[in-house]
Image 1 (cartoon, helix red, strand yellow):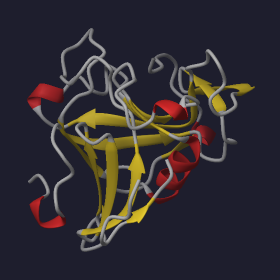
Image 2 (cartoon, rainbow, N blue to C red; image 1 turned 90 degrees about the vertical axis):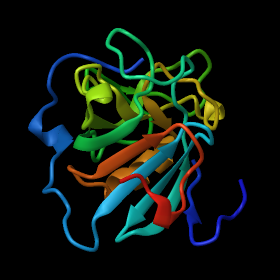
Image 3 (tube, helix red, strand yellow; image 1 turned 60 degrees about the vertical axis):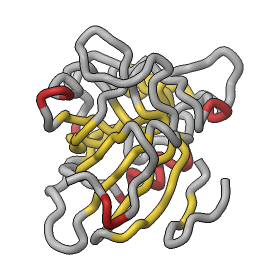
Image 4 (cartoon, rainbow, N blue to C red; image 1 turned 90 degrees about the horizontal axis):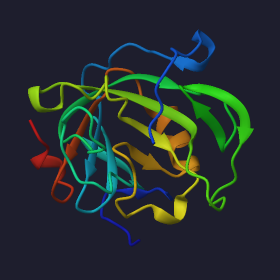
Length: 196
């Protein structure tokens, strides 16, 4: 992964069920003004870039669905378009903490553990803001940590956007509820060409 001008590069089976306890969820006010946050994910490049105040901040490797893109219920597709962060689950949990139904199971899954593909470390819940991705929250499409870090930069998920554990911790230390997330089919857009 090479340097991109103006960016600091990061290294980089969705769950269903009970609502997490208050201790495991961070919900903060929606950002406003010039320091507003934004996240853009490119399916074509399998990369995420974060923006603050309209300027690129960090870049991370991701993995979107192995089945393609779309917002239809009952599928494993990654939704395209405008989304927003609803809440962050797992703040303070250790790297590799397994989350099932957005609850910590007590298990720690090592990076690239053979034969293991659970949700780990953090869960960022997403809500769709357009008609074609309106089922995103109900479908439990997340940004979440994966132990299968060797699969990052390739489409390998069941609909969610996967990240390495160190990267999702860094993202969640910065991210706020209400942050806009755009998933685009093509390449990452230039800062002055972001989706409206």
